[in-house]
Image 1: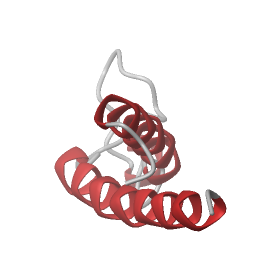
Image 2: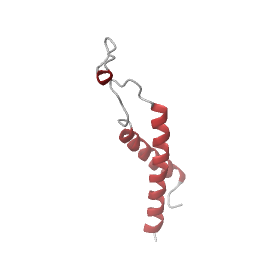
Image 3: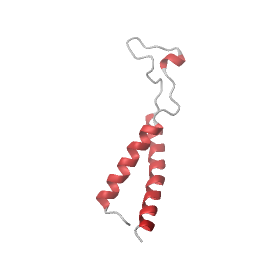
Image 4: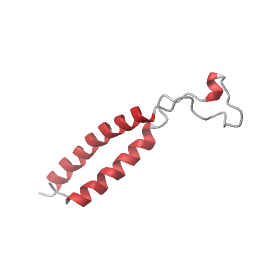
Length: 78
């Protein structure tokens, strides 16, 4: 392993949050698009954000990206 455990965790969490912000907009339907406006809410607010599904996808994608970073760092160190 080319990184220490604390550095690995830090790199993984940075990757995770970056991927999360990329995944959040997928499949979002706003209240305005559906036509079901809640009084006092922003019309662009999502109807069903499905955050658990997005967190799972973020974790899977982040693990793959982190594995790529580790492999790259392993071969770049030689």
